[in-house]
Image 1 (cartoon, rainbow, N blue to C red):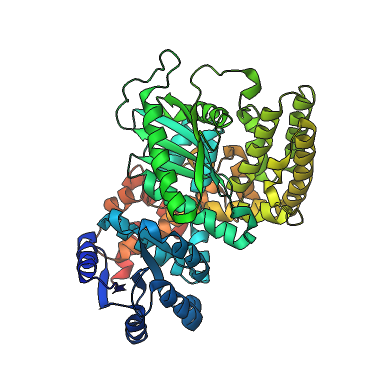
Image 2: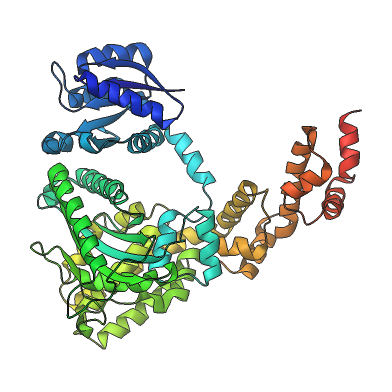
Length: 540
């Protein structure tokens, strides 16, 4: 049972939150209520709640002072805090960044669903580091960010690979249309903050963007780096006015522009940051999302602080403003990042260098190409943000130094330097990459043991070729790929049979065998006896 403490000086708010927690239908128990932070401290000591939901402004002791004292007294072992705020409380909410507050909720927009989402997020952050590491280790499928970076850059080898990975991540792509946006979080004072506070500020801002945008329509979001992001809006029915007429933007672009304006206004109230976003074209399938993303990045170049959203329409206005299509190098880049292949990485960067050296006036495209290599590194490498930050640790502006380059020659120099350091990282990681891949595949197999598993499908999930996966398994495992699957399935079947409630044919069906006869044949080959003989032996 998850214990929740509610702290608010308004009785009606306490009652409202209790009601929402009941509606959420989760394993939640309100262990107490308090009207101020001082009274809450006594209840925290008495009941050790998992979550504290507290107003930011209260008499005697406010919510921030309560969070600060608990942080000092309990450290990471104390309750997770969710702060209830109003639009005018920006300065206080900003201060809470230093107290490791897990989330902020706007009182006027609070719903049972939003509250439950916030609680789940807070509980995950509250997990001990070892438990989080264990949970992350078990997540052997390609990460969410890696999936979307592949989608937006057209890096999937086939629609089948896209379908397998989206299914594994439980992502829904049964929509009528998609529009991609490319944006940046702008903060006038952000550059003056210490690096840790900058990270907290932009992480919190992106979290708020994600929460607010889905209130308007289904949308997937992707963090590209600390300040840049992509949004993929999903239309359940095609919007009216999808084609611009007489240089006017289509209706969907205006609709998305209004959504982004509302979100930007909320961010300004809370964190003193705002948005600049380019809006892409409407496409009919997720596999065309990369086209929309190209136009969104191109449109972004036209934005200013005075005109923070832009839609260029089709076709592009001029060649000099076209975004660079990194997808032309997709096969090499996928292999380089998947296998830590420094040689392929260097060859790709050299090819990009030569391309722009021959076109020195294509600065926007050159910068876009360098940024895409940066985004791929952050999203496709485990702990990519930390890896890239370490590479640029001696640069005052970190990896954001890419945005300080002002000529094609400077961009090429930045990309060469980054490529050299990234290649050195690849060389170091490649030593244990192959065995690590096999370990992850084995974890995936054990996590999906009741499904039909084939070499081709599992290879697609991990973005490597079937023949290469087969070779790795033979070299770094005691058995081959198919034999390992059978061993795992038989092991699971023994557990199911031992329960005594299932027939042999039922177990065979549950584990994805084509027939009970084939299951029995595999079982006997591995165990030396048939499933029936194994069952009989259990009752002797």
